[in-house]
Image (cartoon, rainbow, N blue to C red; front, side):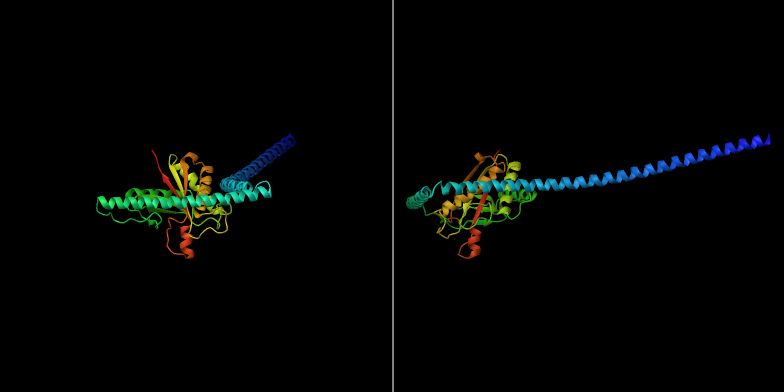
Length: 309
């Protein structure tokens, strides 16, 4: 009987040991599983952070790609212009070149005649005014230097200048000044100034990536914050006469440069019907003299925005 009880006790002890071992194994597996889950969770968080960084990088790459696309569009326009001027055959190209020179000379003659006619008209007007009333105070001629007021004299001009400067900063535009222009009548306009950015004698920005990107950003800014505005693009050159390029006159070159900026603005979303261009050549210098600094300051394109409604 005692042996039987002893045997039963041994069986019970063995059973308890087995249960204990099984419980220990289960607890160990649970702990191991928790560690695995924790490691997977850490891995997922790291992957999430990596993906967020990749998304930021992709967004920056997208902006660069848009700028590159617009630059390529500008290069394509320039290439098409070069191809058109070259012609299909050498004889045709030479004939076209001679015709172009002839037309440019005729245009230069017409422009000189227009200036002389305007001068005669102004002289007659002044003489008539002198006869009927006291002589007016002298004013600056159209070709005289444009005055610059960085702060503006009117609250409206200063508010517009500050708003444009702030918007350009928000769009990451660098290298462009915002200046107040005062014309001979005393009227004030606010100009976004693209400084000396074109190669000598050229009217394309295709090889100036920073200028292309800046003008594209200006176009996006106009589209976003001044969608109903009229935009005037004015081109200006230094006083050096045209010698080697086929533009004929500084007025033609300045007009072509203004049109190149217009193309970038419209490609950036500004409606073409809202943009106009003018070329003033060397008639409205900002700096007097023939130094390199003065000439560089005078070679510029100015963008004027006139909000509506």
